[in-house]
Length: 484
Image 1 (tube, helix red, strand yellow):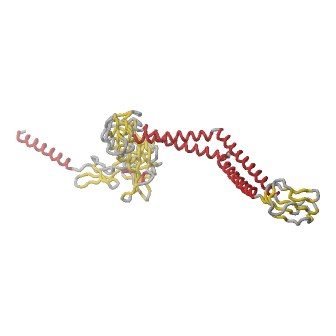
Image 2: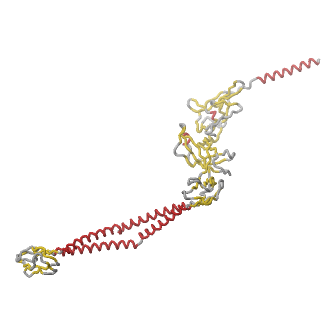
């Protein structure tokens, strides 16, 4: 065969092959009808994520107690690690020391008063005082009674029947025992010295028993009776006062009062003693010195501040999630300043009152952190993840597979070249995965997560209202929310 013919045939074959390749390359790929994912069994976890500032769990600040105090020695500096009980520095306060000395003196006096009140001698003396007051009342009453009887006897009365013979006249001065009148064989004598004030019967007149014959006046005796009455009244007042001050009830009350004074003075001494002891600044716990000033400007300026080694973080949780958070709940956290290090924590406090901002109520939640690295700083940020709900060993499907039909949750399962809606009960839903319960699903069942469409030479997948490139799309996540 001529060479030209062979060359022409070869060129034709090459051109035919090239044409076939171009045609085949320009044909569209087979149409992809559904994108599916298998049903799996596993754990679904819904978490709340937020960022908060890491602060010490405890902070103690020492300041000058008053204007007369000053720093006499400072033994630490900012950034220094300290142990519990370590001496940080010393302050002096002359005014506080003077107040303590005065309080101790007052306490000693009060204790002496209490000892006296509790002494048996006090109760014995009180009993003796009451008895003496009783005796004085008895003596005063007897004296008054005797003088009153003597004063009454100055009225002379007949003791028998018969005529009376008078021996004295009105106005006549008489002595004690002097005969005043006779009646038969009876002689009536003056019981005391005095003056015949009046004669009540005529000479020789007959008198019956108890008839008043004469009246003798004794001004001194009458004055003494008045004095006796005053003395008796004064003795009674003294006895009443003795009962008020020296009775068992009064002594008990006085003892209780003395004990109360002692207790009050003891409390004052203890408080001042603690204040004086606090002049020696000691670390209440292990931690780090975050402030140190040997010459503070005022009583409110920190001298030394110690932050504990323990750290805590506070995040803000909206009211929609706060019901799923409780004290004692565990969480995990990370530090942007220390990448790759995982922290654990426990919720220690939840604010009882919500903060209301822009129509949203939220609560401050504080958690103590453990597993802290050798990282000496405070105030850094921490990413916190709190587990709100967790379902273990559940059937799971991607969130994109979940649909609604007739108000019920369903997933689409491939049925040959078509799909079939299968009802499911949603146990827990997160932004990427859903735990479900269904008698129609099993591990490995393929559920539809997207339906692809082609336009302008680019394949896009329609899934729950979001477009996803076949090569994989970047999901935009929220700072707050859950994750599987």
